[in-house]
Image 1 (cartoon, rainbow, N blue to C red):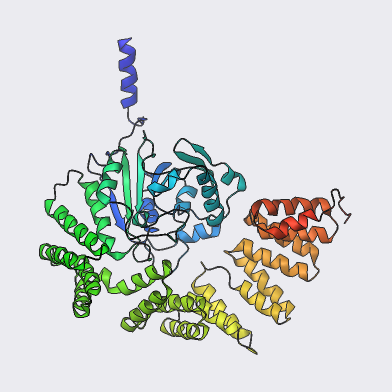
Image 2 (image 1 turned 180 degrees about the vertical axis):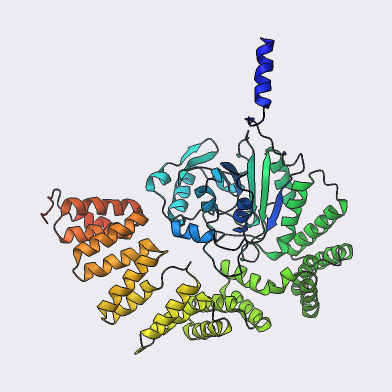
Amino acid sequence: MRKIVIIVFLILMLPGCESAGPQAPVLGVEPLKNVQVVDNHKQSYKLWQRHQPALKNEILVHIDTHLDLNWLSPKDLAMIEQETPFGSKRNEILTRDNFIYPAINSGLIKRIYWVVPDKEMSRGAGMLNKIKEVLNNHQRQIDLDDINSFEKYGGTYQGKLYQTKIIICNLHNLPSLDQDVLFDLDLDYFTFRSFYYTEGRSPLLADLTTFLEKLAGKKLHVKMATIATSISGGYTPAIYRFWGAAVHQYLTDPMKNDKIFWQLFRLRSDALAAYNNKDYGKAKEYALEAIKKNPGGGLDYYLLSKIAQGLGEEKTARAARQKSSLNDPFYSDILLYEARLAENRERIEEAEQLYLAYLKKVPEDPTAMVELANLLIATGKAQEAEEYAKLAWQADENYGAAHSLVGEFLLTKPGIDPNIPFTAFQRARKLSPEYLNFNSTLGDFYVERGQMNLAEKAYIKAAEKGPGYDLAYNNLGFFYANAGSNRQAEKAFLKALEFNPEHGEACFNLGQLYLNEDNVVQARYWLERAGRILPANPIIQDVLNGLPLTGANRER
């Protein structure tokens, strides 16, 4: 028996034989070898991608308020591979909302543990319905069977999305894992009250030190760790930027050997606590002490600027803000990040003022101009919005979003030559192919003016060139149905459903098409399918209730 045991052991140790157990360092016990801090969370995918093929079929522990798993079309995925590693400041196909999708599509990730804010899992029986609601509302191209696959298992909720196992839980119920994992944390996890009610946020919902202690208790074997601060997008207040550095420091040195770093961390934490309690005098003392220990940094000066604002010391606030950007270029665009934060938190007037203050400082930034224009549109200030759209176009003639926005404004002008907005949309599509197809908007424009031949051509172009294939084909089908071209409409609706089987409007439109042809069997099938996808739509149920109980297909 002893010889057999020795032989088995030797076989396991032969080159090419893999051990079933975890091999990576234990988080909170041993220093992790590969830890990266990013600002935009989408950069995590690019970092994972760099380590392929070493990373394959991995387990992802994703600690975040958002799942970040929005669907992408095959064309989108192909275009992502052509993007630069970290892209530019502007919108691209790969975003913080979808970066995990290409990771599962490429086989990099096989299972996801989505760890959501701690308090949310204790809400009782209604939590399963909340989870299904979030998945149905925020994830495209998900089969209803996938959404309904989610069930409660102990303190977790488990199901499948895009053929990938998803386990949703809080940190307390994150199970012990006997395999190496990828670790991924977004700091906005700490600033949201809920993963399904994202409007309810507070400055701070957890103590970082306590969080790290709980995390260490999970004994995760981590191959690679990514930490997203999510400040530039307006999801995390910039005063918490040092938390990203603190998590990095802890993961790479869990014994906390760098005493100076942790002394600074304590001072900053005390300053923040006093600031949040509006004890600005005490907060200023801590901030000044931190500056003494780290005079070359930018964060402590930025924190001092916020404290000085609370004290009404505007001169000190301006000087501290200037010093922060001199010491750290990240803070040069801080007004823009604060504007996005205010807009995300629905403080619209504050956001508008911050955008204006930023553009006063950086008057040629077309990205900020377009963002301000969209904010103004939402608040009913269309004329001002149009001016900023034009300024963005003038500031950068290669900015697709500006061309698109200007094109939309041109469409509203009475008597406009259609070639003028068409040229703007064409330019936008060429510069920014990641945007939904502008020809659908142009098709609507032609329909309103009765130019049906031009409308048809625009819808066909939209459907052919994507990437919003399902939307474009549904629009094309609707156009053909209204024109009485039923077989062309049928073909377009089915094409939309080929790209997105859960496109409820296309199902409904197809059902209506068959109903108008007295094809009750087919009409019932597609209307019932639409009802399952869009259960809250009363019109669908009304149409179903009006159907005869039986019906035969009409011969064609």
